[in-house]
Image (cartoon, rainbow over all chains, first blue to last red; front, top):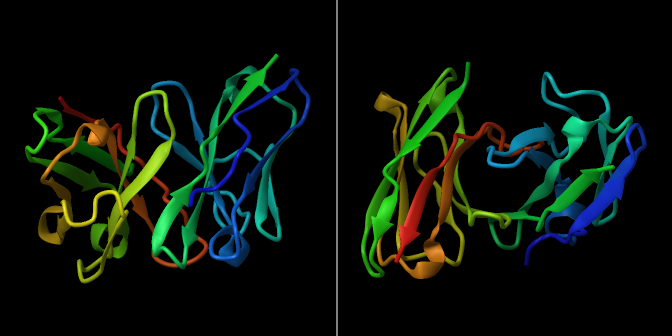
Length: 109
Length: 119
């Protein structure tokens, strides 16, 4: 009952990458998804709240949106340090539980 | 600075028990929902449990329900996870993480994690 993310995305330096996260009406479609970035051997870092706002200190290059049951994370002007795993998360109202996507590994070529 | 420091991980045999702790600092602890999230090295994130600010409400993932118990001591800014009946599939890095109550907040600040190995 988790969220669905593509396992990998590859884009070139300074390009734009869009990562998707598909859930259902009980989670993403209800009140959105939050996005997290995780570098190798590091804890996750919150990139966006479920209303598409960013926590303090997060670059404007990271933007999020939602259409129905699918949330998207767009990273513009890709930099080498953007190479990481990206996870979406949402509260599932039918499970009364947080659910995560399987993660997308972003490679910056 | 917000800090979360987990401890208590280790190696335990199947069927055994462990108690994880998380020491919090840098924020008003009892204003926050606290979570445990685990991650098998090289794999994805799995939410385990949460407890609300005053400890009156708890939630668990189906995979741990009836075996794990989350608790907190607001006087000591500490979060705990009592893990009983451990299984090999519980082997993972366990993160403590905070979250402001309600929408639109997400699971926000994460500790470094403590490794639990069931073998």
